[in-house]
Image (cartoon, rainbow, N blue to C red):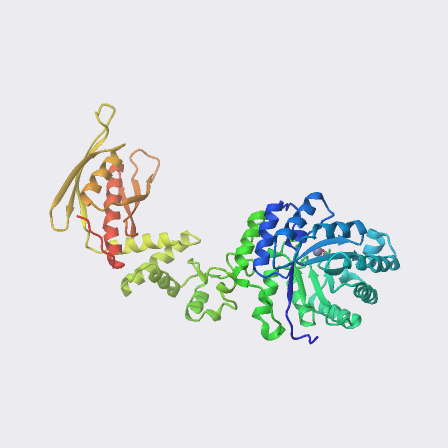
Length: 520
Ligand code: KIV
Ligand code: ZN
């Protein structure tokens, strides 16, 4: 096969090697959910489990073989007849079945773990691969710890596996020891040395102990490997396995270099990643390539400006190609004027140049106080600026409160608001407390059907005569929201002022968004 062409197949071992990771335990339903998603995105082979490990593992492989269609279903087995028979039994209903046999081939593993000679290991392969082949449609053979094995011995072992009927030869970097140049060279030497026909594909299975699993997998593709094994989110023993989402996007993004095809539907990668994270309980770090929350987020002003001008300046992949939210612009102290005004436009504001300058200055001050500035913060900030404008629809003219233990019917408030035309509007109401009563009275005057979304009152010091600061956010049924602040040593007055200011701001925000609201 020409090493620069062909299609790379994906072998997912999230349910076997991934689940082998410390503290991960998936039940049969959870494994089924994941397997169905893997099949849905076009994973070629799903390693459903190690059927002989426990009755639970057997049941998982069996259910996946029974219910999942579209992918080859694979079960792991040692070079033991009983393991192989159990794997075959579990796979019986699979649309297409594969038994994956492994045995260690490094001197270290053979001597200390297996306590076998190389000849005995070779004999195991000669004996068990044909047996597996008689029980499943496909046999994959793995030489465990291949990257620390003697190359001539590896070639001999792989030749024996091919002679026995294996059509997938897997070269694992079991302990994540390999480095890309060396691993690529090893894979090439094996491909050339085994010299199998086109019915055999070479596979790699890289662990991530040195953070090189993706790089090693890609190096192997470059020299002719056509199956990549790995896990979603890079799960797996110790440092994990190659993250399949990284390998597939590496191949797609650098197709100019690797020149190979992939058939995975990458637009669901984030969905699958989230499912695996939720079911395994292993969170995805924000800076995880491809599927992390920050993978397509920009905060630096220079980057935001670049991405807004031309996405490719700072993005090598399109968020939609992996199913992520497109270019999330996180507004914070590194953000520039472009990103800020872009967000204002998205929120529906069309500020004059002067207002924009003031808003941006306020935004920078806020950024020193908060790491991330939310859309709500921006709306409040803009409302504040717009409300500094002279026109105010309502002013508090006067108010009276009656409350105390002896008041019949509950606390009562009478409020008088003055409108810009000089008219005074008065109403009175009973409420659960003095502020509630005043708010009901004001709602009747203003007549806007507002929802109170947020109400806070705080004292500015610990003394009983300290200033009370009230914050209120109101929302109109049209969706327009605005906040207001009131400050007074009389806390009820602070609350009334905050409400009046919020309503005034609401009119200004609605005008800036060109939304009409009709009150009194
Ligand atoms: O890491 C490894 O060598 C394995 C084999 C079973 C393929 O997981
Ligand atoms: Zn492994």
